Image (cartoon, rainbow, N blue to C red; front, side, top):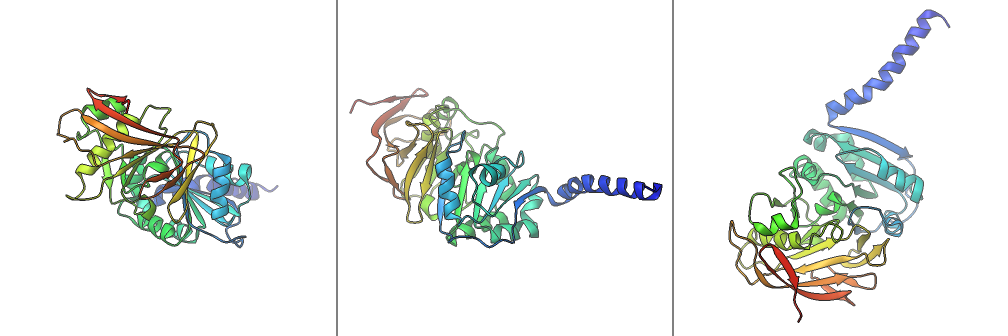
Length: 334
């Protein structure tokens, strides 16, 4: 090979390797694609929300989501890592035309025309796990948040796991201080600055009046969901309806139909979801531990049907009552 051609080839290879990183820095995201975005969507598209608690993703629930998306084009949004969910959907579960991933590195990306065009044409959107504070900082009040609302309102499915579930409710724990509050910390001062509750982010009709939590049973998060509900209710106008707290176990996913009816998929037989009824009768004071005489909690099992946003549960897995005091919660006998 002549020297001039060899030099040109080396320069071409180097440019191809470095250009994506330069573009990512300028755009505020990294972009990955598997499949053919120009291929027609094979089947009909219908709405639904998939709320995945984190950990291993249940294959049957992913198949439900893919079917809702007409086996077409899935856009994955994330703020860390890269293509693991795209690989899982396209290669492992299979049956989709394409999987396109945008890894956000700054708020600038939320205004990028190419990314927004991909969201608009997506048959389904999947929001990955990670740090939900990045989603709040990168997306709240931007065209991305508006695009998510428009996608769901148009009758297209949206899924989220872990942080991607946490940000779907009308209220959400934003983890804005860089940590992840424990049940003990949240109960010690539910109205404190560490319990960072956000709202006016996305507006999904099925989750109006709902605040969610993830990795629920595995990380002992019932106490902090009590605190989430308590603080979120303080943020609501006087006379507003009670909130619902919805926690989903790591092994579980809650598939919500457009009419709000929801069922559990789970990789473990005891995996499910927990519904906390708000409207607490006891006062909640700044700087004081949460003290509640009675909280109603309903289990949503594989045999249950949850109706959102109202909170009615057909065939509940359990119905329990708890009291909260001194940073602890205990089940009541009645």
